[in-house]
Length: 584
Image (cartoon, rainbow, N blue to C red; front, side, top):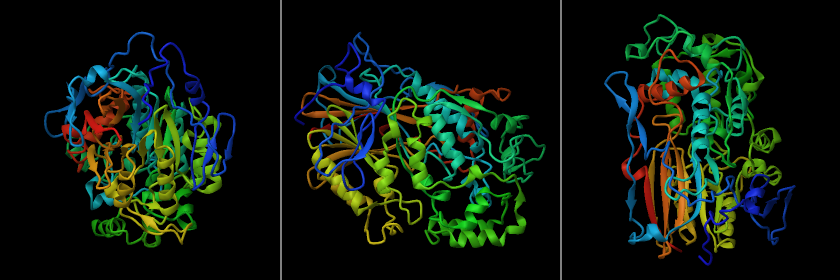
């Protein structure tokens, strides 16, 4: 790189770009350059040069920067105790692992390094409207983990994660202020407007009532009396209580009670996932009036046989019904088994355009930037990808890897792939961090986008090959698989970079990840990854149904969810790390 500056270089005051970061960001989208300036949003000509706005929010302290590990998994991690239904307690932190897969670490680098950027990745929050009529809870009769006992508490859990990020006074290795947060998709769970509103308020601040339908009471599987679901308030001996789940009087009333999010105290950017784009995360069914009417209507299916659940799940997993035609037939055949619930228009599916408008809504601006990466140019072009400047030496690129043709795996269209290549070439003097929802291995769905029937789709191997041709790429940061995995990529074209996949916040161990970029001043760059839990206490108190108590219960219930994987935390080399890389 021709330039190496520290993001902490403006130590005595706020850099001009730090001020602008709260009001705007550059977006390069849709095949031509689009510039979202601090005061307006407009399409730029392809040859126009625009200055990107750095993402930063916090004044660098005048005193020397010191590592800040409090509240991270370096200091302490929730640790299971006992057998059966396990309780959580405070445990020792996870040590940092130095990985030399792509470059040898050189001695003395700690004394030489300068910070380039520091940010937080949140992924797969899966904010859930637990009473939505189109949820697939009944698949639990064939797959025990198809419904999770903690799904009514996603809002409380996500707010506690926001509170944890807000309490971080600096990065855990360099101490530099955190510059922004990035969500890498599946922000919502079921493409429902109710979930989108709750997500936007969680991130930008506001009061949330995580309830839909009857404003007075919960209507869903957890007070249905069906033994395949945890019935927290009923005397019924359901399958989860047999596994040790508690009886909790008042749980459902507490779960739908109004809560407050402070919103992130730093700018945040958004990346789209398949659950944000497709109903149930898998169906290209926005044009299906029957499914839309059922989503907002007064009937909900809660129970089917194991054989019927298995057939439906197979159709989903094998991508044999991407448009939901057979799903509609399935629901119609069970119309008489549906139970009555209160209709609610807020449960309607949202379109990609409505997703963009929510991000552009001033009511959800928080600390910015306006649009959270998206611009009105994205609306005009029908795209959900963009680029932004993180610091003097680093750009960020947010991709849309969802396939509008249906199914939960992803791919990229040709126009977006060419735009990615061009953006990297035009910013060859800057390090680049790529953000997406899908991982390289889960970009296997090359089904044609109905809106662009003539456009070819490209899989993860093609994206890897493209990124490998650009030596300024440092990392590809993503989610989707709900597991911590860090993969080195040394490409035949000469480029090398790290792929950093982070666990979700809906499945245990419910984590987010801090990523710090540093120049070691010896021909190498180090990327430091540090996982963080929410601010909720590790120990739960079944009598505490406050907002904080429910957030703690959210974590513990996820640990005990029947069928939950015990490996999502990853190996030590996938958690807190130093990832060494040769400078391009």
